[in-house]
Amino acid sequence: MTDVLVAWGPAGILLLSILDSSGIPVAGVFDALLILIAVQRPGVAWLCAGLAVAGSTVGNTVLFWAARRGGRNFMNKAAPEGRSAKFQGWFRRYGMITVFVPALMPVPMPLKLFVISAGIVGTAMSEFIGVVLAARALRYFGEAWLGVTLGHESSTFLKSHAWNFVFGAVMLFVMLYLFVLMRERGRGDASL
Image (cartoon, rainbow, N blue to C red; front, side, top):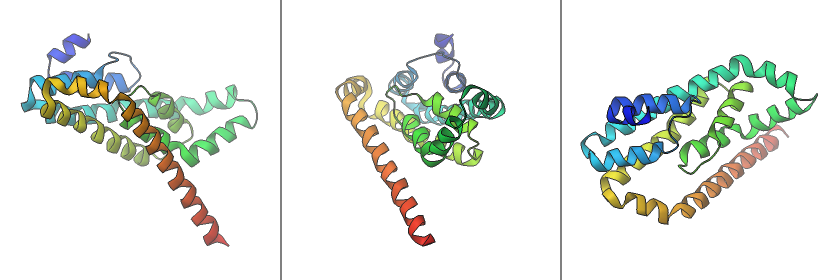
């Protein structure tokens, strides 16, 4: 199925990104496919990146909405007394950071778990969509740029810099975490 969708070009990228982001495992190498299309067909690279952003946002929003509809009841039944409230408090405090970082990074990170969590705890849909759009735009347009600029050397570049991307993701998470802590401290000082 993935091969057929890729053969469809931009329309296939759109459908593939919707399916992949909504929780239907169709291709574990979506990023590589996007870069490959950018290398082979630079004229449609930017269109494919835009469609990948749109499709991923739609797919993640479907997963988010499904979790919002059915996840709260499941969580309240499955989580022992008090643990559900602790998790919800933690996610409200740090949750959108945990959505942004894996949505941005092409290394395997459990984005779907955090998308579902965002839906369960009642994150505002506009905030969720904004975070996914920002992260996916940076990621997919960056990959298109990489494919157009480096051509066939793109995969070599990614392989040789994989640990740099992991380190970058960790550093980004730490910086965003510190930002949240400073913001909370500022609110605490303002209330005194």
